[in-house]
Each structure stands twice: as structure tokens, then as C-alpha cells.
Image (cartoon, rainbow over all chains, first blue to last red):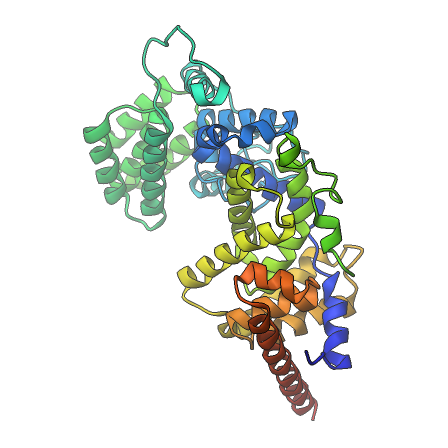
Length: 256
Length: 198
């Protein structure tokens, strides 16, 4: 084979070691991989036998990320493809990864934008997982193909499986895109259609929050305020509560 | 700098599945990330998309790790996955590597900003990456893949043939053509630089 000339060779050799991932790159990308595996395919991966190959640290991380992805859904819905460093006010998810590893790769744009305009105090509020969500996570982790034989006890209400979570996540992402595109009415139609067809799901709270935001954007007024108030009363601890409050207060001011 | 020796299961300190223990994803990730990262970037994936594409590769690696039989080198197996993902990226972005010349400035600016403080990022090296990417953009996808594997990753023709699922003669022919095109692109680049300075 003809070889490269000296100048071409020197370019190739100089470039070879120049572009290496940093420690932050390594941690951020791994976080994204594990999050996607946790949400989209932990069970099937385990079934294929790969779970046996995971280190204990990876298993723990996967479990925590699953909790984060399901329990802290509002944070993680848009975080699957984590790449950006967390903004200063980003909610924090506890994981076993290093702090500088962009643990929360990408906060939903609506939340970030709202916080940027709401001039709220600096800080990183922790996300408190509610009991219902923990049930969902436990039910996923108890899948027989993941952790041995099924347990005889059953939870009071069957928790949604990964398929329904995928479906909900997809709807929420689409609604989020509608909001970004300035189409709140379309977001509302989408969410209403989902409710009509599938009813409540594991991410019901997030859907209600997005619906309240969409309503406030689409038709600011008493009805929207009432909907936002209902959400804030029933889910005051939601990480999206501040976002709902911010958007709906702003829309109320505009209305005046 | 031969790197393949470090990627056999034994050299990587990874247990062979045949010996009864499966590969550890963490170890595979640590061992292969640099190669995957670098190759993804050299294959014309935009800087902003690097994370996504690298993640795609490792999600598949994670899912299929149990299927890895240890017959091929780990790096070869990972690269097959990488090539599949990158080709999908090219298709979905409806652009070929040769269409990307105009994006290089942004890419390199990002490289400078991201890594200027890194130990390996001397200005000369950053400049070399800038020129390299620009020259690689002149190659079609098959030639680019062969060139990257042979010249940057220093794989043998036999290894590349296995990855590209082509015979060794085809690989040799592609590499010869790729080198020629690379040299031509370099000559054009130098002529262009000269004209700018006049």
C-alpha cells in the first residue's frame, strides 16, 4: 500500500492524541448510557444475561438512575441524552457518580427557562420521591427476569410497565415540544387524548403539570388559574410546582 | 502506537466468557471510550452530536455484551457497532462526511474551548485536528472509515476487513485510494492557505 507523505503523516500523528475525552466527558456519557439502559431496557438487558456482567457499582447506579428516571421523571424525561452541564439551579438527583459529572445532564427547557426568569434564589432543591413512584420503581426492579422469581405479594394497584412509561414519556416529550413551539393548545389536545385513551399513569403528576402550564399559556384566565391552583394544592412538592407557579402567575399578570 | 494488543480480552484484564464469567460493562466502557469517542469525531459526527452517538454505541454494547463471544478482539466488535451507528447517523442526518467541510470551524472552536486546558491540547495538536477533519471530509464514508482505522487507530488490513466485512484486497484498495485522496485534499488545502496569505 502506498504510504502517506511526511506532511500528511505528521498531521495524522499530531492529531492522534489531541482529542481525548475528559473525566467529565467520561462520567457524563456513562451517566447517559446507564440512564437510557435503565429506563428503556434494564429488564430486557438483564434477561439477556448482561446484568450478571455488571459490576455491583453499575447495578447500584442503574437502580438509582431508574429511581431518578421514574421518580424524578420531570427532571429526567428530557435527560436521556445528557450532555450539558447542569445549570446552577438544576434540581439534583443523588447518584453514585462524581459531583462534577453533570449528574443532571439536561433539565427540561421549560423548567430552566422559567427559573431563569423567575429570579428565584440560587440552590439545588433535592427531588423528593413520593411513595407512589417508589412503588413503580420497586415493581420494575422486581420483574422476575431481573431479580429472580416473582414475589408472591402483589401491590394494591398494578404499577405501569416500561411500555406504558415509554408511552407516557413520548407524550410528555411531544407536549414539551409543542410548548416550545408556542403551540399550547396542541399540547393540551395531546394530553387530553392520552388521558382519554390510557387514563392515569406513573407520570400523571408530570402530565398534570404540563397541562396546567399549557392551559396558562393557551388561555390565561380564571380557568387556567384554577387548574394551576389544583395542581399546586395536590402536588406542592413537585419539582414542576415552581414552573407551574411561575408561568401561571405571569399569565395572570398579563391578563390584568 | 499499536493499540489493538491492549484490547484483547486478556490484555485488557477482562475475563473470557468461555472461562465462565461475563464481561464487565464498566471495564469495557473504560477500555473503549477513548477509541469510540475519537473515532466518532473523526467519522464526521458533529461535535454537538458526539455525546448522543457515543451513547448510542455504548447502549448497544451494554445490551449485547453477553453475546460477545471473545473470538474477535473487543475493539473490533465495538467498532462494528460504532460503524453501524455512525452510518445510521449519516443516513438520518442526510449528509455524508464529504458535506461537512463547512462545519469544521465550529467543531474546532468547540474543541479549542473544551480542551484548551487539557494536557494533550497544544495549539499544534488542535490545529492538526482541525486540518485532519477538513481533509477527512473529502473522503466518502467507506474510504473515511478505512483511513481512520488504518492511520489513526493503526489497525491492520485484516482487522479492518473483519470490521468492514470486506476482503483484505478490497480494504487495501480502499486505503490506497483514501490515502491518495487525502494527499490531494492536503495539497488543495495548502494551496488555499497560500492564496489566503497572498
